[in-house]
Image (cartoon, rainbow, N blue to C red; front, side):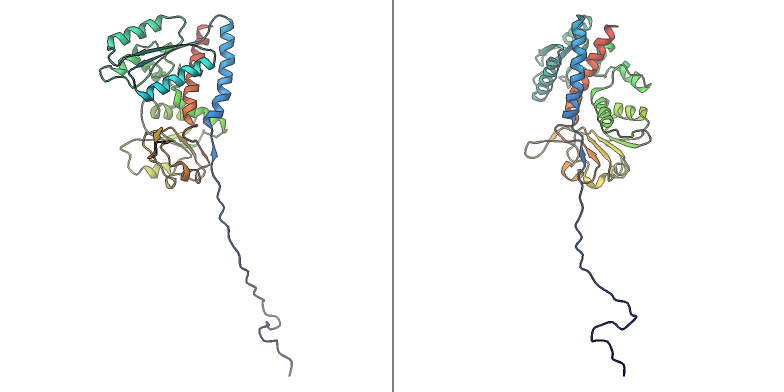
Length: 311
């Protein structure tokens, strides 16, 4: 009788099945951070160089900032803008008034700044006291000095694709997309927020760059449905954590324009950053993201205004 296989050994010609114990380690990759602080430094260096060239010809760029009232937030914004001007070699004027300033008095000051040849850009800090019509004040600023890009003339020119000035925050967002060499043309961009200051002009700039654009507002049904289809997601609502990680398409570019405070008083945006960065491909932080770019693009608009008068 032929000898049989040892107990437990496979018979000749049979398959040998070997089991391995494999540990699977999860792979996580965080999004690349788009630093508005670093990008701003590069852009401001170019602005300072251009300002020095104009100053050397006796045409120092000038920006006037008008503040009405004593809002702490507005005072911080204005202080940062004035410092940025001084650091870049601009001539800067800060006009501060009590909240009791009348609308007629403010319009009178705007008219005087319009006529001042040393001033190339005028910025009236918003919001204004309730008794002053902000629209009327913005429309009183000469379009060629409207470096915020809010005048109806500049808004109309933006709509036609030939803006004299691009609104600062949307302009900064486009520069951030440019800095990562993101192919905007053909991408699906979703803008959450439809304000005249950010949302609407942002959509126009993305559209002009060749993106397919969806604009969401407070009446949008199923916000997550739209955001999950976005290659580029720009969020500007002023509502903390309105966009969470499950509302983001993996690998998307997430631009957070919001500026809020959490329960501990810490600055935060409209996006749940800590969780969102594990899904997005690129993301902007708050602070240090869009904020520095807004002030930087104000400087860019002002230097462009000054260069136009030098031609």
